[in-house]
Image 1 (cartoon, rainbow, N blue to C red):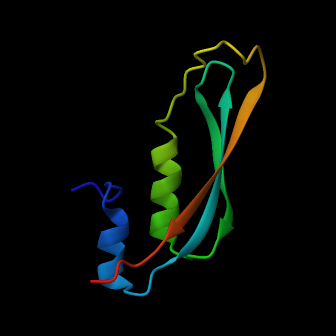
Image 2: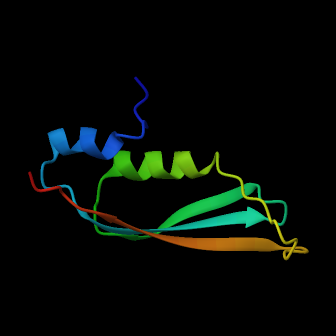
Length: 88
């Protein structure tokens, strides 16, 4: 199975049951909506496998500009993530 599957967080919890915390991803796209770069701006989770997979996942993202508001340059998105352990 793919190490970076959508249930990666749940899989990582089996090895690190207390894995939780906030992260912030910064993702840059060009004016056509194509991925340019990404970095982790904030990391309170401290899990290299999770970090790597998040950065790999955003590389496949593309966005459209339905109102044609972006004429040139880059678009920078900051995405907050909050990983919490579900209580049974």
